[in-house]
Length: 483
Image 1 (cartoon, rainbow, N blue to C red):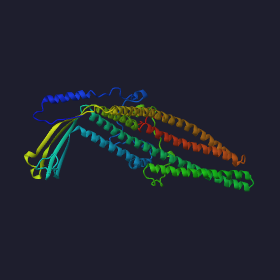
Image 2 (image 1 turned 60 degrees about the vertical axis):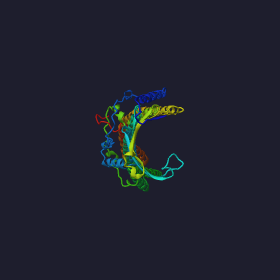
Image 3 (image 1 turned 180 degrees about the vertical axis):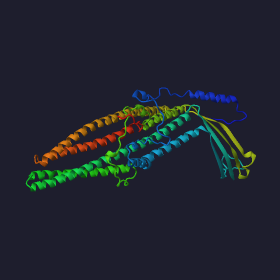
Image 4 (image 1 turned 90 degrees about the vertical axis):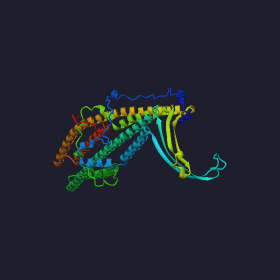
């Protein structure tokens, strides 16, 4: 239904009152009862989190450079290059630009819209139409110059809610960009550590292969001297293919790890010459003995989920406002004439001003269905936020447990390796003294090798767990006192 008015000398005040009364009466038709979101956002304090809701990072979307605490310039350069060139980060930035554009569109409803038009047409007027002579059946030029202004009165908060929804989506896009950067930095760091681990295992495998080849040469000499049997020689020879196969497997894994790291940095073929620092060269990140869980309140993925709740609430309010009248004020002024030469005459002046009111009365339940859908989207956004909050607490707890356990395992492993090395030294001494055969030496050497592998694995796991903990806390950990 639409009401349009143009002010005239006969436009009495009582007519405006009548229109207002009609609008109020019609607005009573709006029925939003029984439609509302059912979910409630989890209180951060109930999960041990603080109530802070300040946005994470700077306005530029920067994240804490926690990976620099490992003290490896090569790793720093890889992460910096990835953050600058990764398609994932660029895609996130494009989403921010789109969200900002939508926010700008929503803000434009706060001010009047003004447009201008100029029309010039040569036209034959129908002799059988509504135009009387001399227009009928003749050709004339028509000219129109007009400016039009319109403004929507936001009496029921639709435009404000639409702006809130757009701002929420913009904040979510910015937080998503930070989350993408944080995830990418973590993946590059973990990929670098994985490459260091494989490099250390390769070095160990090559040393083991060289030692076994030396033992094989010694076994051949002892066989020729009659000090060993052919069985000892065969035992030494049978172990070499397995060791070579393991070394080749490590080379394959290293190539694949290097390719994965290159893809993360946006340089698929650019890391062939990369030689990571030795695994032990990375400094361990100091982890506080007590981690304040309120650090998670501003994790980027949680901030994004919180912003999407805001956006969903705004969209629901926009849908609710559709139940109420939409009032626009429209005004125009300009010149209109038949014949270009008369466009500047005073008689060609035209203008108009008046409101336009629109209100749905019968829609077959469409608006209620839309509002139910938007309310369900609010519930989905809230439950997504609640789930992320719970998962964030679990992730931090898991990584703290991993860091603590790996440190205990490392102490036990160091003790076990020292004992295995002592047994290997004794076996070598007995063999050199002719008191035992080569198999006892090989057995002791295998135990030492297993402990050396375990040391590499635990060292890599410790660094990996630290990287995951930094991601889980959005890189916001303080460095004292350490665990």
